[in-house]
Amino acid sequence: MKNMKYLKAALLAKALESDREFAEAIVQWGKAAKQAKSPHNMEWALTRKDYCKSCLRNGWR
Image (cartoon, rainbow, N blue to C red; front, side, top):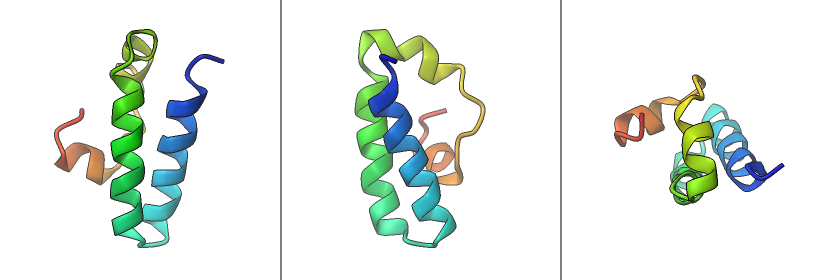
């Protein structure tokens, strides 16, 4: 799956947020954002509906 790096980073970030480890979650959302900017991930990332509050706060969706 060509979106696996984004998916792994996003899922890890969500897990860290649920454990209230916000500093590490911010780092992981940054990695997910970098992957989302890749041309082959852009469309897939923009259609996802499970963005967390950090993602919304940072203006990524």
